[in-house]
Image (cartoon, rainbow, N blue to C red; front, side):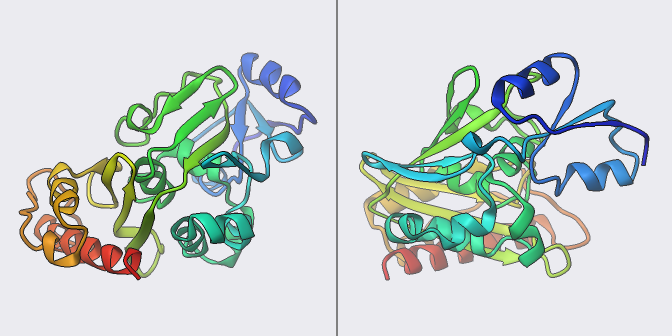
Length: 263
């Protein structure tokens, strides 16, 4: 690991000043620290956001759950409001990695990193969430832009994410056994604006599937999914699974998620 300066600001203003001076934000560190150990990242100054209390916490505002960016995965999984209003989101958080990862990893860090096999981006996209930063708000459909790429500007920080409470929702993940990331994960939500389906692990980033959404708008049942052809042309193929297998998993995991959502 390279030498670096470490800063732990106590408030958002101090963090913003450090980032404006060229610092790199550290949330839970589950990706950044590993990358630094492998010498894939070489930040001059690491700005640890862990002491900024205003960036953590969960509250209900109208028909939304607002979750602070520095809220840990396990806190999302255990929160009574999340378990009552969006149980699919609590279940998703409880299935991320292992206990150590869930204790340290954060919602904002995962979403900002936008790993193509991460779980949280599928929930953000399927639920039509809004990403709040220290500069603006960004709709989920505009936020994710491909492999490890988002709409965030350099130095821009996620402060919270607002999740609209759906009529029903569920997340089904086929895990890669070693990493516990999603080989394919599907988050389905029935909302006031119709069905939304977001898929992670299958492509170069999280994406919605128009065909599956159209089928579920006609009938929110597992049977409706079987009629939808999944094109493997743009899906990942690696030592873990072929593109064709991932296409098959999208169908299977969507059916499972719909069945869970329907109870």
